[in-house]
Image 1 (cartoon, rainbow, N blue to C red):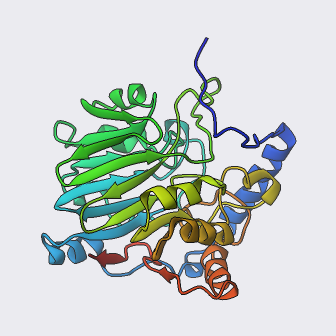
Image 2 (cartoon, rainbow, N blue to C red):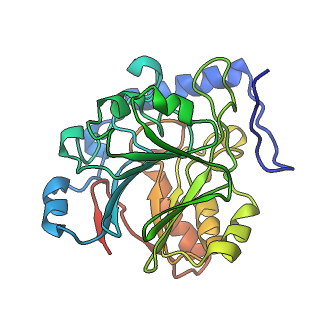
Length: 314
């Protein structure tokens, strides 16, 4: 019998039925059908490669789209939750289609030193992209427990699996896996066979947090106390409606702000919005609601990388 991973003790488990899923698929299909490029104003029009070339060896963070972040951190190039394909689904044919292209194409990427993958969902682990990546002999991939077997199928040799709260060091860099409230699944019979996580990236100068996919819960206060404060928190702000279906696996903008406050983060880097239609909230609502939450809480939280292709130099 396969081992099945679990969320933290006491975490409610989401219960779905066929009719609920069918209704969601129908609604999101209609949203995609009626989406026009003129509705999209969250893309940086400056070519990202030129921006990165101009930075040279200076450290940076940039939002590629969805939950995909590229950064130069202590001189190392790190890619988190790569999703570059046109469709997030099996065989590159079945699933939601992206409506904003990635800010960089495969052949524009610098040589990747580390890839971090938070879980195995198609919009976070893009196997066609990994198979095409030509730096396999150089790149180290860091994944949660029991995800390494799938990564090997993409041809990578340097794979590190981390359980929650485990750390691996690479010179001045450290990578720590931390809990998330979510699940894993790519096929019909593999639910929770591999684990899921968020990541902390640390050097002497900066500490970053990437939540992966997660719901809100008390663990973030514990993470903030143990590892904080954080300079930057990459947090999901989209894919939260219908609420009864999504609340146990994703955060809305109010909850993302609360995570940032729990972490004692000084800046939110929003993600998981503006790239593919997964749920039914208006496509431009997440960022608006994030600013509304900041105002409502009278918070001085900073928000950066609001456009796909924006670059933040460190």
